Image 1 (tube, rainbow, N blue to C red):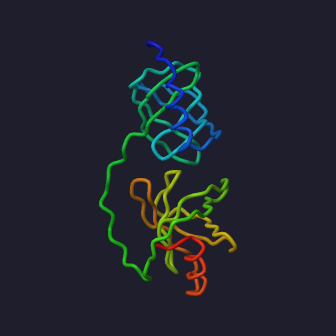
Image 2 (image 1 turned 180 degrees about the horizontal axis):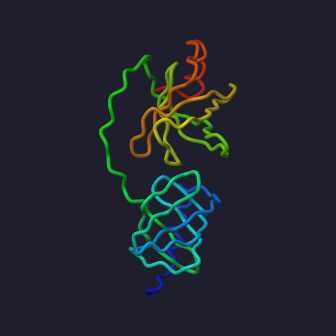
Length: 194
């Protein structure tokens, strides 16, 4: 199909690797003309992914990636070499998010929590603010409003939460049960409130 481009420089791979999470997810790539091929997503972050592809892809080619149970997204091929390709996701049109009335005061924090969608593995995310009713997190995977999640703070049992807003790589979670103010104070101390 086109000219094969060399693999990215090792320094670029090292920088990319810090932000990407290794995964193994079967999916499909849809190319121009409606041609669909099976692929494997091998690493992932908010802005892009790495795939194994049985067909050579063109640098700059626009494609759509689909993974069962996770939806689909448009992407652009950044590089292709020896059956692997790097893709960058196309920006999703920004919708102005309706301001949500806050039920509790939020405190800026710096720490990590574990996050998990039903039937998936958990992963660590940065938590940026916290209240008795919810928190703001920096997402690794793209979430959608209404997604049901399980949140794990160190030293506490998992708690259910609903995604109430998503903007770029950030999301807001509302806890199923509000924290008692004493528990919130303990978490603020552990997470390092600002």
